[in-house]
Length: 441
Length: 189
Image (tube, rainbow over all chains, first blue to last red; front, side, top):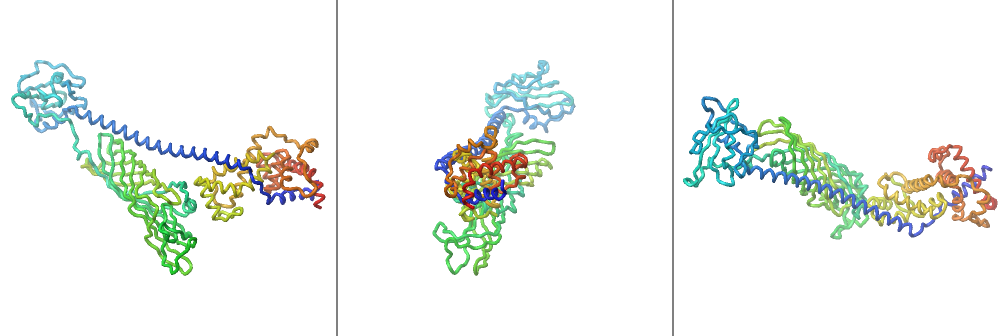
């Protein structure tokens, strides 16, 4: 084909259709909107499901731990003979000129509510060894724990007749058990030293504290679902976190050998830099026209000393701004303890409540005949309280029975936005590495 | 840096994009109203009829809303949206490739083509109607070469054909169009 004609064909189509616009049918937008509605529903369900499963997971862990703890506390109501051994350890150190040591009986050596001994591996008592059994005092020496304990009514539900006063194990195997018969009719008041109480750990023995300091690497998950999110992307791009840290104390309550509840309080602060930007004058809630500086967490009204009141839409240039947020945090964490010789690892998850204690931004503004420093501008649009999840691992090195040092990696993620009526909904998160010292009371 | 959109200030366009990111329906509709007509023209050029063009347009806008977070505020939003529309048209071409007749139209088929008013210069609708009469493969190559300004090498790579095939398809497309246009072109001279 003639090249000139080819070019003319191309040119004719290109130029004729360059500015041509053809309006699509009305129902096309309706179809698009229907599809968008379906997509929005799906996203909403996904987001809701995610939060539901996080909440359900925490609830499940707490429920399991609570059930386990209750069950364990109930078990402790059974009588253990451990405390009797300890009580009499100092008074008896030899029988028949042989040196004895305290027998550490297994936890299963417990007399149930019917006075029956639940232990295993007992041998039949040789009746010949029951010296004066039935009198005030009786004793037994043999190479195993006697089965006649089955017949002793030792429990905390019905008053006991016999109490094992001493249970000692010689080296190698020889058991010596002394009993005392108690006559309730003669003495209704049971002597304190004969009462066998359920084994208990005092509150003090269960508590420990861990002061710590944590350096954190923070960021925000942002959601633009606020109708005023016009400048969200721009705000997000120009702000970055430069420093975050927490200083606090954990109060640890040991429920049993494995499970620990941790709470406490911490003070955290977070600093961000906001790049230079233009701030526009808007009407605030009271109708005054002020320059508004948007940050990820909220916004501040700049109030320069001006001779003329700005009009809506006027603008000033703000230099690099520094914002600071301060929070008091109360965590509630359920942790599982994994002992490893002199180390122990506490792995836990829980929730934290964060109370806003301060939020401010400082910057410098430029404009026609204007060059002014502005400090301590309050950040508005922040919620006073927000909550989040906290997941932590606490590696402790036990220096001795009272002191330990800790390395505490921790991840926190807010489940509720820290702001309201702002351009963006901000969900802060941070990963921290902390160091602490533990003291057990 | 975002460049100025079609009849819309940059700041306004940025607000609309942010609104779309927040899935704000009013912003989504506004963007559709601003860019719908120009994208409809593009879709008409890439489709065999209006119905198919509207389906491509619908798919394209849905894709744009879904992936708008991937728009990096660099360059032209309209250019980015055009690429989405062309991709949608191309997807449709590929999915229906086996069903389409890749051979040039015969003389008999020309007779069945819409009658074009050649008494005066052709209207835009008529020109689009002509493009729509092209076989899909020719139409695609013609659009990419004439309207998007792609080279044969780029078209060949995009459509996974040889450069020779691309040139041949373009030439055949022009031949078909020329047969319709010759009277008008002569008049234009």
